[in-house]
Image 1 (spheres, rainbow over the protein chains, first blue to last red):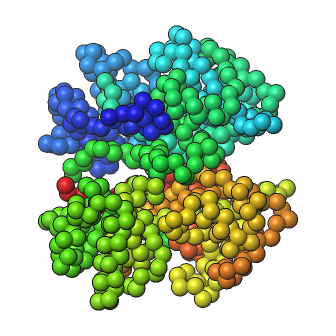
Image 2 (cartoon, rainbow over the protein chains, first blue to last red; image 1 turned 90 degrees about the vertical axis):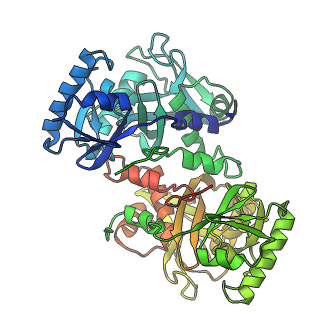
Length: 295
Length: 295
């Protein structure tokens, strides 16, 4: 039974119970992803690339090194996409990693990564302003022509984190493109942690990590979108932002979690709240939560 | 293999691998604690109070209501302590709860709670000062006559959270006793989340929740201990506090986690750090992590 209101329902929506089988994928005996059984079966046709046992799939130990692995995976992705078993490559590479981005063992195309259950990384920024009557947050309204969540509310700046670019560089780029924030302002963004969750979607198991940032802006600043992804910006009292999260589904789903984390860190959700424990702990789901690894 | 330096080792020390059997304890079919098998065996002598099956122990369903359950548990605790099977009651009550404090199904003595693996709650406060040359943190040095961690560094204010007192009330009391903070200053403390961990000690499985608070103080303020628990206070640059956590064992073990959480929330540990994911996720261990519940 899911509540129609409250903060916790968004955490539950981002971490649905896993009611089907996913097969763990290992590289160098390290867990890097989860595949649906149909995909594992298909990959049996490439027995030199994947070693498939009853309850796990391993990238062949013969494939050593970052670039060899990445090259072979790129061929596999082309082959799968050519048969229209997965969506076409997006030309953007994602790290395939057992831990953080830095620990990547190879890369694979973003579109394919979703089928292989590898972790995706993003960066979300809370822009806020201290006014005499309290704290205000800047929110973006997503453009109506966006593929996912058109017209929904969004964090002030939010974007995926591709391979080959530093966290800082990517954040500054997104700050400029999404909100017209010059680099000297974007540099003042403070990294404040992360939220993590594991969705189950049409394409597969989708573990996500969103690095969170806080940026205090001067009352005079007006964000300005430059890449067409944001229709408009609105500055709302934090209490109203909290209400929108609690009582509506106006936000793109995962942005709710970033706002909830902000509210928790700034004392706008208090430890007296019945759901406090579940909220703080629930915002950081470990990779593979709800799944069983057989070794 | 444990590293001798770094932040992560403290999280590992607070969450050791569970290498022995603990039996889950249920009240009203809700998991509230974990007992060692010897204690479960002993409680067989009270078959009207506990229903014991192969892999679980339940408080008898005949015991309904908070006060009835608490009264019977108090008798059990006296009986166990009388045989010197557990340490003597401390006269301080802890909630027995499947979730937060508010969800308590009954209470039991603090000393006994440790053997029954019920969650303990505490409050820790980070006192900090903005100076021209950066952020400084106030730390306490524990009195030399304290039972645990004499002479170790501590958060500016830290204390257990007994039953029957509100979070706010207890925090204000601790602020006054430990650091001489008047209530009008203590009121400015901001709740910023919690850290949770599950230790395994001589007495039993010990899941802890520490509610964390930040309090910015004016540069002129000097904390003053009034209850004899703190020998002295020291104001250190945040970088030096971070170094003490990383490179030494000067802090009382769980206080390291509160400082690490502070460093993460204020951008002093950055997402480029190789251990960032493990740190942020590791600071919030779910209850029963590492244990298996049989129903």
